[in-house]
Amino acid sequence: MVFGIGEGKIDLLPEKRDFVYGEKIQGKLVLDLKKPKKARKLKVKVCATITSRSRNISTGRSQTTTTTAYVFEQELSGEKEYSATKQEYSFELSLPSQSIVSKEPEGAMGGVLKGVALLAGASQTVKWQLDASLDMPGFDINKKIAIVVS
Image 1 (cartoon, rainbow, N blue to C red):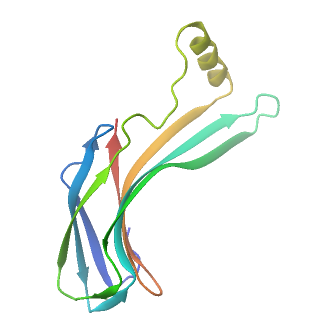
Image 2 (image 1 turned 90 degrees about the vertical axis):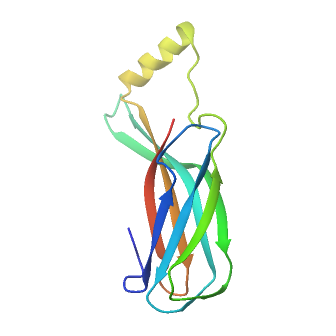
């Protein structure tokens, strides 16, 4: 997804798309502007959002909440005029050392909690993505790509 249509584009090129907790995400960001642009900064980040869904048993209504669970950002370049030539920036982003989703207790208590969650229609989805942006006055130029962390 790219905003700032006609201004240029960003390509995100990670070395791979599947990662494990504690790993470093390495790759390149390619900035390709149509003409020189003044901008505040160029940054890349990895972020995870958790979407939780549940159903109230008594009313039957469902509820969805989305929470940002993890963000690690790296500024690649600061305030300046970015040239119209294709520019390449290397990045390295850290992932958390362990899962961002809380684990259920094991044994009988874990079984009870799983049963209650099943009856309530509860579920959680974790979405990981790399997000790059050139922060300019007016419209920013952005790029987002999905990754897998397990």
